[in-house]
Amino acid sequence: MFIEQKQRPAKVSRRDAEAKLVECRNKFLGFLRKRLRNPQDAEDVFQDFCLKVLRNHASIKNGERLDAWLGITLRHTLTDHYRRQATRKAWADAYANEAKLTEPETEGVDDTVCRCISVALKELEPAQLELLTRLDLQEEPRIAIAADLAVSQNALRVRVHRARAELKKRITEICPLCGGGRFMQCGSDHSLKGS
Image (cartoon, rainbow, N blue to C red; front, side):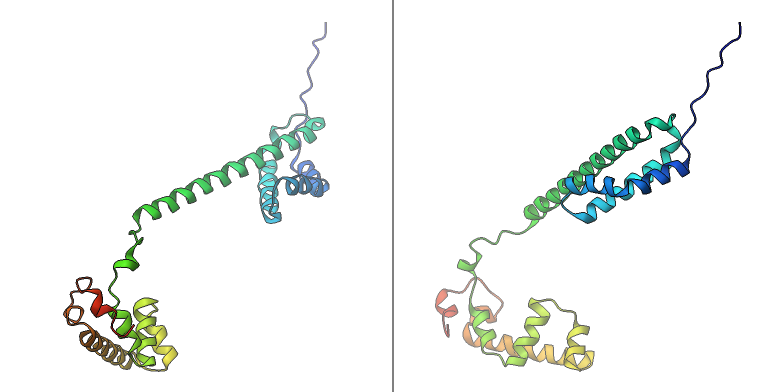
């Protein structure tokens, strides 16, 4: 009447898990590359898979089940990747939709915009036009413009002041209403001068 002692199944050691990952690396990566378009994504998922295996290798009770457990873990890791990717896409789409909702409407603006400014800009000296375009339209930093022109910040400030004063003078000559700051209130007669 001996009581049979049940033998506890041996846990899979970390060394065994590492050896299996190294041995089957190409097989696992092949599986992932077939399912993912980007080889870099396949490498990333493989890295996540390896981390899961090394963290949880002790939960495998029987060495014979290691291959099956690795296959299931690999599929779960791939599924997690798809879920993260879908979540990122949903957030990106939501952000894009939010940006569209907060943008001011620009449809039809070209039909109603006063052309006096563009006519006046064309009458500026090329250096003044380039300076105002870079600073006000392209919003380049003053430091970058000053460095590019090889002038000090103060010299740039003077050039900008003179270019804006000249632009205001030209606008006033073309259209007294726009020169007085009442843009969009002038008639197209003024804005079509010089076009």
